[in-house]
Length: 283
Image 1 (cartoon, helix red, strand yellow):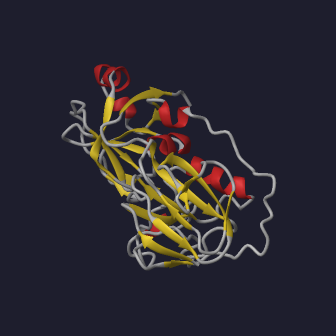
Image 2: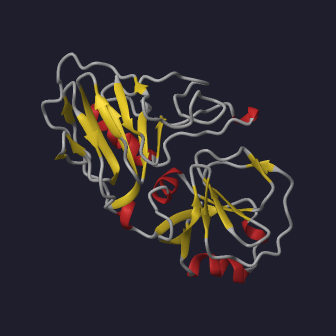
Image 3: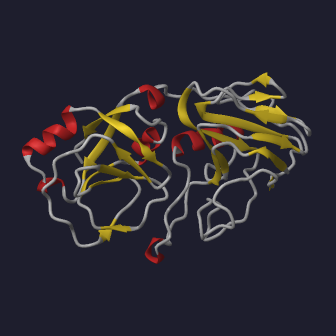
């Protein structure tokens, strides 16, 4: 078990998501930065879909009541084990009684904690990803006990580590593809989309990222249609809304662009007021 001594700003159990239930209005959910989540599991030799703890901006304080091996990836939140700094992207042995804590945010926005064998929380609709009204809780809380497997032996003697592409955190470029309503935009609107910088709004969460800068919009609403994580909607006010992992399954705003999974992961590591540039890729 892992006891939650401090929950952090917003920490949730996530795997790669809940597939096949969108026709019932159930979001995909899953790790916002699937790239980093997969790295954490790969370092430990886990299945890439094993559940991890997604930590946003401010880290929790966790007491390990059983020995295990962990890996931290994604954002650098100055992690410490028993008050000693530890590295990201590396297998770290944790003995029973070990306390994992976090400090200053150095880069990125979301950190991922994987444990050997994955977190063993309840699976609902074929996924352990936390989401309101689907799982019992939508985030961890002080006093929670997070179930993990006990490592009977420490079997990662090779100090496994993986090199991570730093552009994943540093690059302003977010690659996008044309959405279903892209051709309804004027040439001047298209030029603005790709020739200016946008900044991430304070209004960002697991459901959607709003961008601060507006794009003049004279498009008509569309008939309510399917949307997916990565869909970029253009609202009547001219705001661009990038739908993220917990987004709704249908929407009525024009879908002018969309992001692939890697671009979703990169955007998920951007903090409020960080600048991005959209780069159009041809399909």
